[in-house]
Image (cartoon, rainbow, N blue to C red):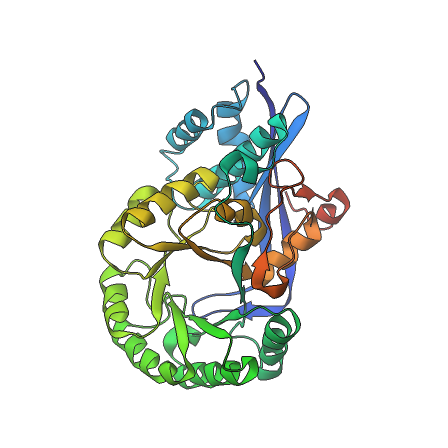
Length: 365
């Protein structure tokens, strides 16, 4: 029997091109934690976007659960990993670490049998719809116009998203100015999305949504905190745009509560937070049981094979920071031109391989 003989993890911190921010947070760098799981001379790779502490958590707390185990038994390993983090708590760093390990396990399994993940799971579609995501509140008008122009008019991406809810919703006039600027820039044919990152109160979000309707905004992400299910439902019931949330979900119970509350029109899932690919498919099943589509949150190249295998998918988020990092640190990153990305069907696993020289420049732990 083939057994797992090595588990490693490392953190890489990549500076942003300029200061970035949304409605409730600002940052100047992004940290990626990469996990590798090896067996029989084959290595699987997974990653998450989390504090560097997640790397130490993998090696100190999770690796012992995997060493000597059968890499083919991912359901049993996933259950063991979730039991192992009981006292640390499933949400947050521990859950992010489990997510990266799970992705690495699936990648390893596919590589051991020599097939791409899309072949292992089966395709629901050959090309995956995506939307350009960025438009940070820290951008001036020229930077916003440049980014949107590149996506829509140069790359042919027909859906784009900007951040609003600036400074916890205290600058709605600037939010509305930027929405109008975005619409003028992309024209009338492209879809316009916004993300408030929980920056508004519920009634404030309703008022802003009414003002945005003239700009044909069709996606209103986290108008209020994802923890405020009643507020999300209120905005959803009174808003023309689809209301979405779910990116902080860590387990099936979280997604079930959100769906049962009728809080969203489309459920967002982040495999780097909710338990990797195993968590992704569990959350997608919850959404399907409530007649909802799903959308992948961030980490576009990681999500691409799972998204291609998910029948109830709306699209994946081609997030500016993450696509830049994944394209620089990995060989095999996908091309978003035309607003549709093709999952890997030629190389085993998810098809991405870490570039040691590129990664070494950013390694922090």
